[in-house]
Length: 101
Image (tube, rainbow, N blue to C red; front, side, top):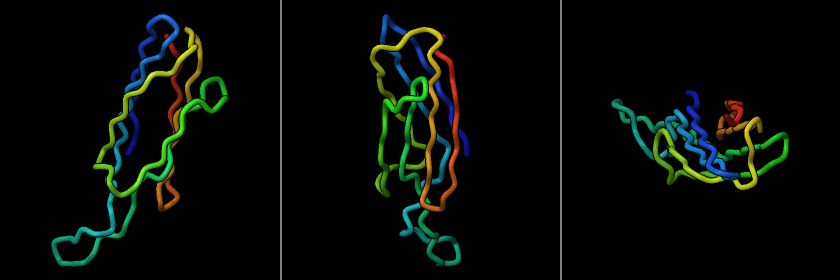
C-alpha cells in the first residue's frame, strides 16, 4: 500500500493527481478455496493545505482497487504544504506530504 501524488501549479490552482495502492475488498468476493475475503476498503480520504482541511472524500465498496483521483485546489501557491491521509475499514492508514513547487 502507498500513495503517489503529483501536483502541478497553474496560476493559483493546484492540479492534484493521486493514486492510492489499496486492494479495496468489498467483502463479497471469494478466494480460491471458496472463503469470503473480508471487507477492507478506504473509508475516508482527506487533504490539508497548510494544516487546514481543503478536501474530504468518503469511499465505499463501489470504488475499484488502487483508486485514482484528480481534483483542483484553488488559491494555492508555491511552497504550500499538502498533506493527504486515508483510513480504511480495518483502521489502517497512510499519509503523504508534498510541497507545491
